[in-house]
Amino acid sequence: MRMKKFILRCRLFLSRFRPQKTNQESGFIYEVEDEQFQTLTTEEQAKHLQKSWRQKMME
Amino acid sequence: MSLFSKRKKLIIGGCSYTDNYARQEKLEEFPLWGELLADKLDMEFINLGECGFGNKAIYRTITERYLTEKNVGLVVAMWSEHQRVSLHLDTDDAITNKNPWRCFHPERIIKDADWHDKFYKPPARNPKKQGLKYNVSKMCCDAHINSIKTGVLETLSYMHALQSVITVPVLQTQGCKPLMGLVEHIQQIQYKEFCKNIINSPYIDTMEKSFVGWPIDERIGGYCMDDLLQDDHRISEEDSHPNADGHKIMMEAIYNAYEKIYS
Image (cartoon, rainbow over all chains, first blue to last red):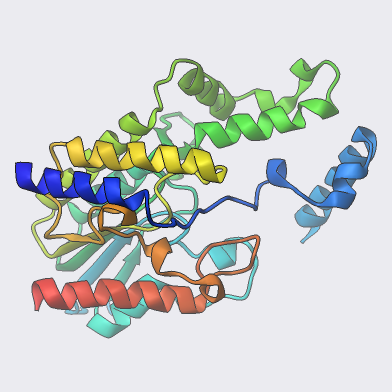
């Protein structure tokens, strides 16, 4: 078990020299990066959100 | 399905990587990895996966069903994010009792609620900041009771318990990425901590036999099902859930492990 842990620690150390894939989320509302949406006023953003929500509910 | 069928049963459990996510999102449906696996093994199919499930919910739904079923041929658990909270509600309400699990990632609930603050004056009126999920999430984040270490150790204990309880062939694997996706530099730090917790856990040597992709993260030589998926194996750029091809790939990985271990 000690040997195994040692090997895994070495792997973890060496992994810093390899590029790692990242999985940044993009499907949540707080991550919206739509430029048009960002330029709207808060009121307009709220209207837009409500409209999208109603549309989703209608579907 | 005949009442007198002699085919063995395949019981699977998990989150949206296991449940019929496409149906829930009203997308075109396709065969799930569980269905494909059941066909390949000629078993009856019991899918306990539910979108959003946390690992406690996954462990309990599988175990409790397994203990009441006869003629089970294989059990497969596809685990979810390690820091999701799973609450089992017990009320007098029949509808709630039929679907008693409330699962969520506290950090996601808080982020979502905070984002909506700007639409309410004062922000205290924000309806996203009320209710069970928000209150529990707030407590978890404020009191640091939902750390990576807590999540990892709790999940590993379910993984270990599952393979101890199930006396027929059992396989398990990590479905989605085990941690919530944050910006790159934070992810690197978090996954390093994640790996350290796996290495230092008492479970490190106990899982290899039943686990596809152990020890879960590629930094230490493991993988999760999500690592097997390329861009064209996902529903869309915004929605990284596996599509039809993605489900085929996941099934093949599990089937190959089954063949290797149990044939």
